[in-house]
Structure formats: C-alpha cells, structure tokens
Image (cartoon, rainbow over the protein chains, first blue to last red):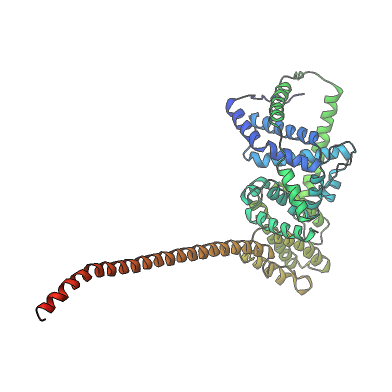
Length: 173
Length: 264
C-alpha cells in the first residue's frame, strides 16, 4: 500500500542538479562497486540503484539531500552490503564482526585480477584506513573531499592516510 | 604484492569508467523506474485483509516492546557502577546514542561528556558510601572504553593534548584511587596528531626549501647579471681607451715635430 506521498517527478531544476551529480559521481560510484564486487554487471546495477535512490530522495518533498556526495557514498556502501547479504545470507552482525571483506567466489563472475589484488592489499589494512586509502589512491581525492565524503574531520583523514601509507609500505614485498 | 603491482592496479581501476552509452541508458532507466513506481495503484483505505489485521497486531506488539524498552532504558540510565543495569547502559544505550549523532564534532563532544558522566557516577557512589571493588572495577572498565574512544578521536591540538580531557582524567584518577587508575596516552600526548603535525612540519619544511631554492636561483641570476655588467663595463673602458689612443696618436704625431721646430 503506497504511503500517499506525492512524488514531484521531473522538476527541471531537480533534473539539472541530479544530472550534474550523475555526471560527476557515476564513475566514482561504479568504480567503488566494481572494486567491492569485481563484477561489472553487478557494479552497474548497484550504481543505477544508488542514483535511483538519490533521485527519489531529491524529488520527494519531505526530504532534502544536503550532502549528496556523502549520501551517494553511504547508499553505495549499504547497497554493497545488501548485495553480499543476499549472496551469502550472512547476518548483519557477522558482517560487522568480520569487517566488510566478502569475496565474490562465483565461478562465472568477471574478476579483474588487478582489482582483486588491489582489494587484497587495501583490505589487509585496518578497517579505519581502507576507505581513506581507497579514495586517496584510486579517486585521487584531496583530504578535504575525502573528509566531506566520509563525514570525518580533515585532520582525522590526514592521520589515517599517513598511517595507511606506512602500513602499505610495510606490506609491500 | 609489490609496490609496482599495487600502483599498476590503482591505475587500472582509476581509469575504469562507464561508457557514455551505458550512462545514458542508466539515466533513462532511473527516470523510467521512478515514474513506474508513482503510477502503481493505491489500495483503498476501507479494504480489510488478513495482512492489515496482522499489521495492527504487530503495531500493538511493537508499542508494548517500546514501552518495556523505554522503561528499561530509563532505569539503566540512572544506574551506577555495580548495579544490574549498568552494563546495559554503558554497552548498549550509550553506544546507541553515540551512533545517533551523525556529526563528528557532536560525537566527540558526547564521548567527552561520557567521561564526565563516569566522574559523576564515582562521586555519587562515594557520596552514598557504595564504593567497593566490584563498583570500582565496573567503573574502570566503562571509563577505559570511553577514554579509548577519545584517544581515537581528532580532539587534540597540534601537540597531541587536550587540556579539558586531561583534567577530567586527573579528576577521575583522584576519585578512583591507585587500584583503578586509568593509564592513557592522552596524558603524554596522542601520537596521531604528531603525524598530522609532522605532515604540517613537512609541508612547512618543503615550503622553506622551495623558498631557499628560489632565493639561490635569484642570487645566481643576480651574480650572473653583475658579471655581465662588469664585463660590459670593462669592454667599454677598453673601447674608450682605444678610441682615445686612436684620436690622440695622430695629434701627438703632429704636435711633436712642431714642438721640435719651435725648440720646445
């Protein structure tokens, strides 16, 4: 049963803003999903779902999306977790305990060996460092951008990047 | 994995993009999906079904559960170390409240407020004469957890200190006594801001190095310019002397015989 809310679809200013966000972040979100799933089709599906949710949020009168970048990133993370929940029927507690390190073991998925190697390297780091290192190295984001994306302080991001880099150096052969 | 392999993998992933066609199709599907969802029929408010009855029962059950939980939450919120519900307060309620705070600054302030709360609990225990080993230990464990959370927060100045937090820790340790005293790196300076300050120092050093290098370049350029000027001056002097010689020699040639003739 629908809630009875009215959806204001297609206001031109919403569409312009949304398409600008899509143009800027579609590849970023796609790469994140690809990095986590190693499957191009799944990554594309998740990216589409992510932007669908953003579009719904932007066009619903009761909601305002104040930080779209952070919102997008959070949605993407949640969708990736949901994807693996469906895949492996893990409980949320187990996912939280194990850390977000599920590996897609289906034989027929398209695995990018380099993406897998990269993921193994980054996820060998402590949980706090993984996201900042990923965004710094793969997306080449500045500290301030990473901070606003993850909702952290720039100081903390800077600290984590430094620690993560040092740890990576130790892990390299 | 070697650093080269890592960098290669980074480059490969960072250059991965959706094709323009894929993006157009994705956008079209987003708009199409959102329109389709709006046009789904809305069920009548008067229709009754087992599903709606079940939903009512679920609503009552949920309300009852909420009443029980809120009662428990209240009872635990006023509990002190050693009480039965104290563990529920520090392990469930307080983390839930922390999670509800989205802003990192709010979270940090709440973490510090929890430390103050631990001090208040100890004071209340002492005032009521209920301080004992069990209560002291429960308080110590809870406070240690709070302090660990603060250690990982970015609430420190460039030297890794926070005077407010340090003073609270001192107050807690005075109340807790030697047996349950907290050991924390907050008192000696948290290492993480050192890295941040090292980064700042590195940036400053790099700026200074660049400035020094720029100054050396300017100095060399000035020396080069001075050398050029000196050479030019020397050449000009030589040219002038030569010019004078050229002018004076014929005059001497003329004057000398004249002087000889005049007996001068």
